[in-house]
Length: 453
Image (tube, rainbow, N blue to C red; front, side, top):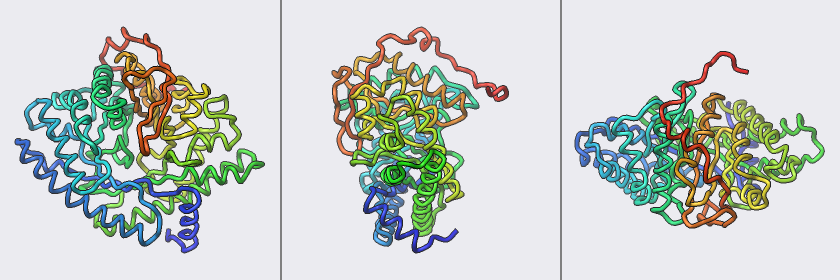
């Protein structure tokens, strides 16, 4: 479907008035053919490839920005899961850390904002390389600046790998104590049913089913959606859903245009448009404020889950009408620190850990960027993660967790992470939860696909 001149002008207006932007253009790069039995051979090959393609990504993004006047906020790269690249190499933590530093150095040299893919697919079990990568995460992410990591700990087909879930609780605590305010934990996310083409960090990676190169686009327009909701105070919910759907249709069309043109310029495959609404710390650029504009007094109060479910449905329908290339997460981000109204709701007491988990049952992203006390036991972190991933496994959807234990902080303290990561009150979590359950380890079996009630 061709893009009309009127659509372009309407998109420019959304950019100027309501913080609409292309949140990220993320180039997926296959590195499997760079594998080598020497670490030097591997790192030299991946450095050259990332540098070449990263520079091209920036050049083409600048050209598209100038042509259409739509900001492209982040230029990112996602690579083959690093655990695969480590398979032929010595099973040592320092091997994984050196690979992490090479990826980070290449991203810096190419002036890429973030590079994702330092992770593993361990939903059913862990190879020796997978285990060493997980053990290397604290050092790797504390000694790099642009590198992000992910772990797929569960899937509907495989169940939940509780050995990996238990291990990751300890990994998080170690990483938190190696970085200021635990900020290193913001660079790693764990998932159930992780998509292979997610353009957003920290979970972005280039899946094994992807081509050599693939350009994926993440759009963002909470401010635009909030504005149209505010302009329709008397619409019933059916009418409001239609208004949101039409708005997301327009936003998605802009993302499709940018993605296709950039892919053509770069001579790579166009992958997907991720239609997730992603909040920023800017005033009114907030998913929680959309919910409040619908008529919920404050995010987290009764009615929030129903309103978020309606928003999610309208977003997906609008995106699916606009493009045949919808993918990635394509949900609604509800990060506590990156969304001012979410953070305010925690501070005011209307949003707690339990309600945050409930909200994720109807969105496709999960519990994101929330801070907990630094003395939270590892088994409690693992239990929080297991609970969230179980929602994804049972409901055959993507869910994830990005939790930040903040050393030295207690519930109610405000922690500033800086920049787009924002700030958040430290949430109260129990010190005792399910230690014996977590220590059982093993694998929670995959759910039965019949009898869906």
